[in-house]
Amino acid sequence: MVDKIYGIGVGPGDTDLLTLKAVNVIQNADTIFVPISKEGKASVAYDIIKTIIPENKKVVELLFPMSKDVEFLQKHWNNAAEKVMKENGTVAVVTIGDATLYSTFSYVWHIFTENKIDVEIINGISSPFAAAGVLNIPLVEGDEKLAILPQGKDLERYLEEFDTLIVMKTNDLEEKLKNLKDKKDNYLVGVVNRVTSNTQKTALGKIDEIDFEPFKDYLSLAIIKKLK
Image 1 (cartoon, rainbow, N blue to C red):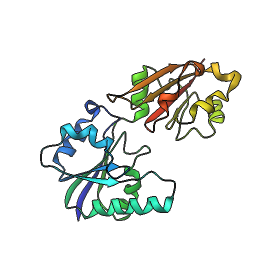
Image 2: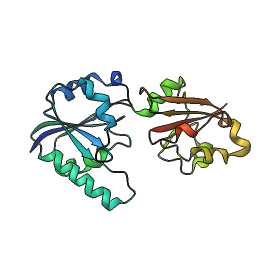
Image 3: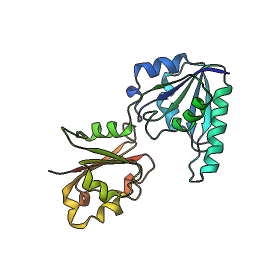
Image 4: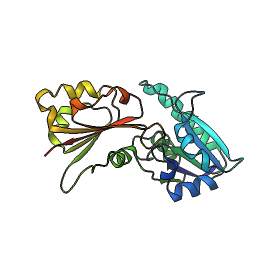
């Protein structure tokens, strides 16, 4: 049975953004578990850490499929958690971004804690913070308010209430923003795809100045700031 589980956020894409603690734990763990969304598909988290993994280190894939069927997902979360808990020694379960923000690790964290396993979370740089950095804009200042929306639901209402919005999935964001009509010029929008990776794409401007087509990929996000 496993002795200790580390849930490690490995950041948004650039290996240089790994924390020193993350590198230390990954290199010294007995086993490293990496998430995949489909059998045979490359793991983004593994791609981030592969150059710092010692030779002959045991690396195991965990399947976290993309689906809206909660029962189907729970079955895979249970299978993944069982695989980790059966491992001997100290293990690292890695996830892109930060392990506490919309991460694959949170699905198995619940199961680990229910089984009273020793779990430690090691934070990583989350994609919203990395995106603000590459766009060279502050997220919030002073007493401004910030909200994170997973898919942009009720976007117009939140735009009224908050100074900055982060939208984590942007495949239908263009349609939502263009529905703002005469309010469109009131906002600065930054969009980023695969932030800090070798294939990163960015755009920054008012709504009508941005081509949203390259930002409909799964690993895209938007930062929307109210202009003052």
